[in-house]
Image (cartoon, rainbow, N blue to C red; front, side, top):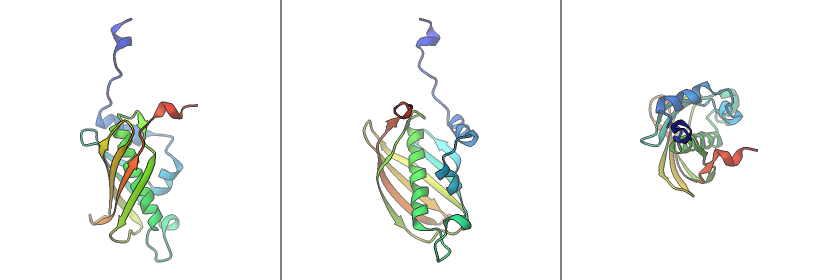
Length: 156
């Protein structure tokens, strides 16, 4: 067997992971609905920064604020994507449980999200997510527990 055949696959750089997200042609419909866009990746910190474009025609409640369930979905997206990054893009981590605290109402437009893996284990990952308005004020924060699952388990 040659050295090339026995070599481990080369680890992806943060920039390569970012470009992979930015160039994808298969963005999940949930991500599309939320207006998800990856902004930054840090494998060393097991964190991501994302942006959501909260559309008034899709996401508002009767008070003309972003409905809390959509903010939860944004937080879940931040934390889930951070898990993918923490795995070196080899696994997803379906959410087992999530707790969310709301600090102020979200308005239509740009929302910045930060997702972080606090602890990554073989059977469980602990995550945190935060959402900020354009002025940098904290809108909502979540903690979660997820189950790391290799991508290969999802192939049919």
